[in-house]
Image (cartoon, rainbow, N blue to C red; front, side, top):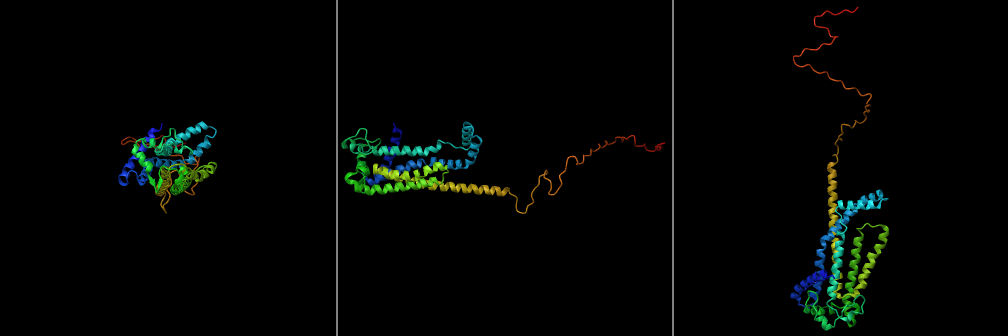
Length: 343
């Protein structure tokens, strides 16, 4: 059902093993260890850009919290309108809820693909007694060694089954190692501890940048800080050493990636704050400069002018045209006329 995941994962693993086998030998445990590590690095590098976009969206969502609070207060009696306005706000600011799930979905599919491919190197009945390790159609060791594993040939399968790291086979599980328990424990326990510690610090770094309600934080904080690392510590006893290498490499990558991305985002936020402060400083009046008053602003101490007491405008008389005779009024006497005496 997930062959679209299994074949690409096995192809990338095969390519890295082909390269490292040319240097260390096909059955070398170091070649297989490096192949698993570089497979994880390849898959996580492909998911770096979606993770960076997810981190940027988290910053935008944090900035929009005041707007979201105002919408909740405004439409608290209309949940449907509130949902519509929140979607519009997210769309206007380029927030895509599905895009934030891409890194998580990619990591889950990568883990499922890697786990299945590595588990398929050993499809014998020897692990059926372990939890979640049952094989649907178990094979004999001879049949398993002669059966290809996706893009890996039967020769590659035999190479993986014989690969060892410090005397411990990569396909061995700590809980079912039998006589090799001490040898496998020397390798598995340090890997389990490293995976658990990396998971803890990764969760701590994520929680410091998230603003969640107090009720949710009270549940999520102990779960992410302690339950997930404990799962990595306990669950490591029931997976092959090759899977433990995946856990360690993936968790170490996540921790380093968070440190790099969060530092980059903090630097960008500091630059944006400096630019905003510089723009405000340019708009602010210089020290000692007199404030510029608008025409409608009255002078300090001046009495307001009331419309009733304001003087009426004087209409200007129209000037006579050039060469035109002057128009005399009745009260104006003619030139040379005798004054009229009033009785």
